[in-house]
Length: 89
Image (tube, rainbow, N blue to C red; front, top):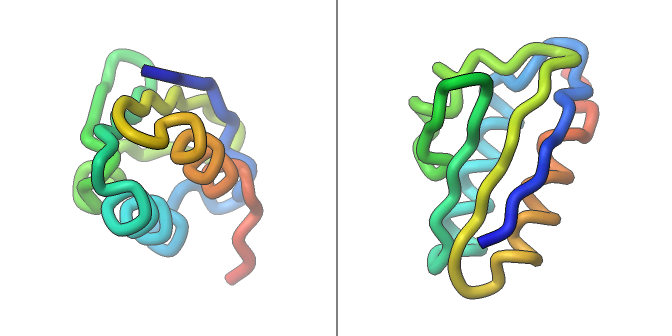
């Protein structure tokens, strides 16, 4: 299991587009990995678009991503990049 803390850099927060990219990457590219995302006391399944949207991660907030399974280090890096990339509308 690997984990890392990330700061949301998107000025509009972690909204639908980046959440969809995160979930698609987690489920399609890394299907053998379990992905959890934590914000404060809230822990959610990182492979669920509904859960990712209810996380409510806003600009400047920190989240922790935890990945376990085959290719976990690579998955963590890819998913982390999605969290910290600025998405333009």
